[in-house]
Length: 300
Image (cartoon, rainbow, N blue to C red; front, side, top):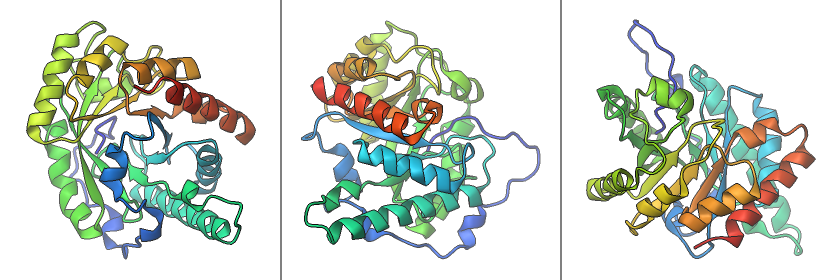
């Protein structure tokens, strides 16, 4: 789970309201090989993730953006990001996206010229904490913010969220999360000791630690809307721990930047601000297509 900016409160925090909802699964949405195997598969080169912040648009608008992004080549959807987005908003966004993808799968199955598997992309929670969960998601980035200086982001939110995720049947994706300079709000609120460009030995040590903890994924994050992307030398250093799947996000806005991250060893590229800044769906589709092409052209 992502441990980014969270609403601070001195009151006792209540469990997610979605814990009372009847979990609705979308088993036909998942690739046949299963969620984790799909993510770890390297045969398709470096792939793209679209990050949707449910607090920044309606569920319907988020869904239109997702359909456009998937049509342009995005192969996974992350839902999360806002500090204080109510869990019911997160849940409604996940559910609406899943239903729209389900309709696309059905429509493609009726058209011999359409590719049904194009629309079988996972919808994965990337929340600011245990307050923003949904039983409609296929999985959750169950993360440890490894360079946080406080217990809350190392184990606290995980302890709160795990019982509800188990009840929902949402798959936890074991992930180490590292925040790099400039870090943005996630670095500030997560009280992370930001990793600077050139700290390759430190990154390699974190990657080895992630491997020894049993994490399958290592997420290298420069922060939402970052002015610079993660240092490619740091990506290369993490890539030396070959067992890990590398997700890289923050500061990537062009095909050229995506190509740099992919050439350094990224398995997945995440963009969110790019999606939010697009003035219309046509522009969104074009920009994601450029990032996807850049990532694919330089996959290691």
